[in-house]
Image (cartoon, helix red, strand yellow):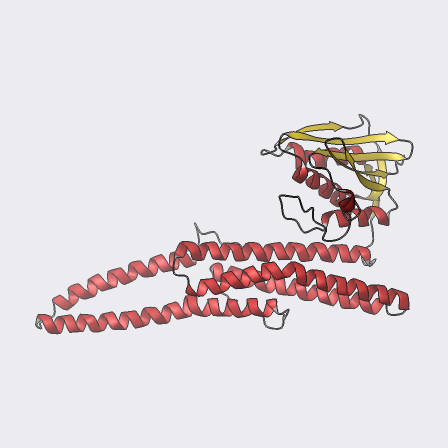
Length: 358
């Protein structure tokens, strides 16, 4: 559950602010009381100084309990994740940013463990066929290598910022460090979920659920959500859709993934103020969908790699998982739909063809 800092009095910043105010009040009150004691000024000062020493010790114990100890446990959990050790969950359960971070780390550990368990299950299913087993082992090695490579950077960031929390006293920086760590854990969770979905598609663990629906209305709805209802759009949208319904028989949820990835990819790569054109036309072999974005063309070498896992355009100004187009290719290939990408004057066009039904 996300912490609402405006409502929750247990955030780290508010704990520190409350503690500092209470300490200030305690020092003032103790000093006033010590001056009222029926003793001389020197003895009164010694009594007040002794109180200050006790107060400092108490503050040190409280800081160790509420800040230093949770940070140490979070640091240890991050180290375990960096070493792919999921057997020791983080036990920080406080109702503040540390508790939220602990929950995110534990959730990420569960997803990672599930990824490897799912991979082992797939391995057992394919052991009956030697060729299939060899292929699976190669895929497993690729998956582990990719996971290790893709998670190395965010795990390093998590560990570095967690260690930074131990020594950082500036509350603003501590809040910033916490936000960065949470963002990295969410990014890793998204990567793992997407990779698990792609692995399930590749290994046949997920079956398609085809149904009949109007593809024109379907495209119009998704395009409206991703393109028309975008307040910060910096492109000129052009589109061409049939005026009458055109029906298809396919997995609607998976085709939504296809359109989402293709449209988002076009939005990310369209040049500022450039043309983004979406087209759906009825042809002899079915419905032909295409999306064109004006911008930098793709080199011939990269055109051959663009559908592979973890491919990233070296000239792109954004960071993605490199799995979106791989999922598109897998879903369309599973159904025998033709698809492709080509450079056109001033930009790039992605397309696929889906059979129409009555």
